[in-house]
Image 1 (cartoon, rainbow, N blue to C red):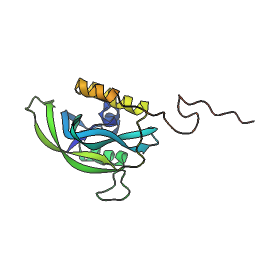
Image 2: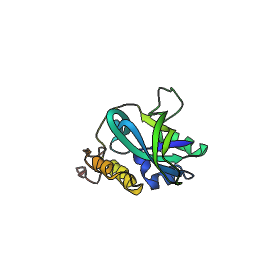
Image 3: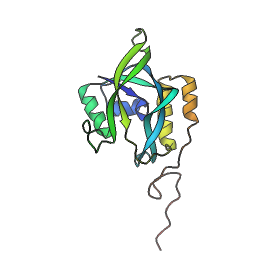
Image 4: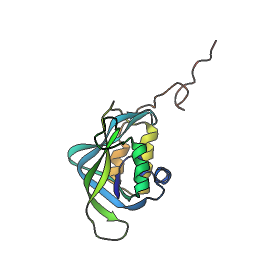
Length: 176
């Protein structure tokens, strides 16, 4: 089945770990949406990517073909339990995309694919580490330069967590 990645799942190493059988289908755009950061993640120390309605904007990402096993693993990583479950961190929804650069050389076309849509919970700026992960994936897949330039302008937050867990954080004071 087809899956649209636009956040940290653009990172090829992360996708190899999470979905070892995935296949890159090509570069895709989601019209009238933009990337936002509607959900705080302790793991990343800041906001994580989500799809946000935005008239006149275009959101870019990569279209993957996933096996059923890969989708089940990704559901677990993304906090998707089942449609309508109140405990979902993300909902899995169909989106209509423009497949603008198919890797198989076929013609560009509209396709329907699954995308994870974050349920807002403590919106926050992304951590530098998280945004760098998105940027690395965007560059790897050769998303449009103007889109990558927009991503580089996103303000980041300092990673949060217990003192000493973030390399930029000072060490906790020694016990007396």
